[in-house]
Each structure stands twice: as C-alpha cells, then as structure tokens.
Length: 185
Image (cartoon, rainbow, N blue to C red; front, side, top):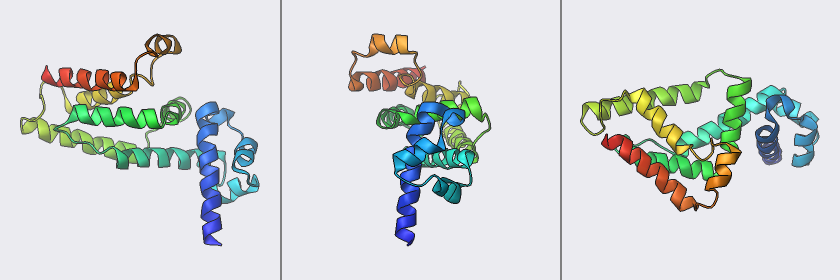
C-alpha cells in the first residue's frame, strides 16, 4: 500500500532526525531509529540503503525545507536573518544536524551550494541597484547575515546559560538589529 509505505518512510525519517541530531552519523544506531519509529530495522535498508544514505535523506530534507520556508529578500536582509533565527528556534535539531554534517561529511550539499550561489547573485544585483551596501562583498555579507542569525544556536553552553534569561523576542531583536547595523555601515 503506497500510503503505508510513505507513512513508514516518514516515521523513519522523523526518528532519524533526532537520532542523527543527538549522536551524529557515526554514533547513530539504526536499532534506535527503528525502535523510535516502531518499525522493523530492515525497512531502513529497504527505503534508504544504509545509515549514511538515511542521514543524507534527512539532511537534504531539512535543508530543502529551510530553503523553501526562508526565502531571501536581498532588500530586507535583517528580515531574512530574523526568519532564519525563527527557523532555528522552531527546529533546534537543524543546527545540530548541520554541525554533524560539517564534522563528518565536510562536502558541500549541492542544493545548499546552488541556493547559496543564487543568494550571492541576488545580493550582488541588489548592491548594483544601490539597495544594499556594496563595500562588503556579497558572499561575505551573506555569511555574516547567516551567522548572526545562528548566533544563539552556535554559542557555547556557558555563554548560552548567561543569556538564557533573555526572551526569544529579545534574542531575535538582537539578531535583526545587528544585521541592520551591519547594513547601515
């Protein structure tokens, strides 16, 4: 039954997100993924081939969802940073998966690479049109915006504990204000 197959595949993907976010690729166990999904472990191999391919499917989906849900508006980079911040807040596993990918894969994901090139080109055009400051290269500007948006997910636990008293709204405002100040020069 196609609906059952898709539902099973979805349960495996959902279970794998938490497993990979928590343990990375090397530390993840297909037994735990199958148990969490309440599926037979053999179905992981049936649908995904192996654990590495399952990680790639999970990571591709998370990145694809982010690209679709957080479109770039080069004329509103502060707003873009706020939306990235919102995505990290709603999906804390996203930062952990990205960290594991960098640590254990270190190869660019084609979807992310292509979308990043497109974003850089759009920022370059906005710079040419005078909508965005042009004294910082488009790639550098995009990198700064993305990293400022991820500030709270990339901090050490020690720093995070010091700012934990700040509300989500406050943290988001810090991000958008910082990008606004960066853009103002």
